[in-house]
Image (cartoon, rainbow over all chains, first blue to last red):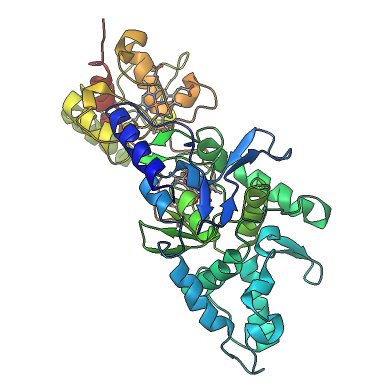
Length: 283
Length: 157
């Protein structure tokens, strides 16, 4: 493990602490369970025109927080994955089916997380993983929908993400999703609320800097769902968006709303090339 | 008409006790600066220092201030404010705090004494819509004056 590097880094951080601020991402590298290597830094995709390099949020967290994600036994987000494994094989609804009945093992979902949100031809719109899960529950299982940001749902998304860890995010920008992507981009650059701050103000103009006690990352979503030490649970992408918009003293959009789906699509594509990392650990 | 006269007299009486604050929509900016006090009452630097730290001010979320180094976590989004009184006059500091976007086009700094022109204005930090009620500025006129009174103490020369 990287325990030694961690120890050295924290001493350096302590020495720097008084007054001086940490800037930029750190230099640590992430390998999970000594076998899944995670790309946390890569050249920005061309459509993220104001960034030259993209970084996983992991690179902006303290060594202590980072360490939680290096081994599944230490990653509290894996409890959600285990819960979802039970749901995966549990029959629910009028059709007498479980996820497993149609999809086999969870590992058969490898690669899926990496390409979502994605254009759904049948629905004629871009859908998120959460929407696909509920679509299966309602139309294929005859089961009740899960709440968009609820525990069952977020655990299931964590399970589906976990089997894609290490694969590059590769969400399509062009094609039929393009207009949704444009809408998401518009939202990303809109300064909302009484503080008049956009996603870009914090995560593009100011990443690497401190905003009060928080070290701003690029706001990438390759690590979602994220287990946050702050609220000790797995958090979904839309719950995080909601929190960030609320912090600008704005009226937020609703989780699962067309606006947040568009924003998720856009933000996901800004992370094309980083590894799928969820469930990750953040503070 | 009679009512109006009575109202006017009442207002005059009131203003002899408390100075009338300039409304956020009536503030006059000249090159980003605001010449006259917003509250008409001298600012209190001690109260200004408090506002720098918390509540709707929370200036140190973005700025480092050595005079407030006893407080934890100063941000880095804006420039450090040490010596700011050497760089700016009182009217300029008032203008920056009231609405920094007049002085610095497109600034990341919030407009602390403005009530109009927001997109999806929320009800404080609830995430809910603001609704039809009157919009309060982030800081009151007196709070702006208090913050300015604190900033004036930040001299290096």
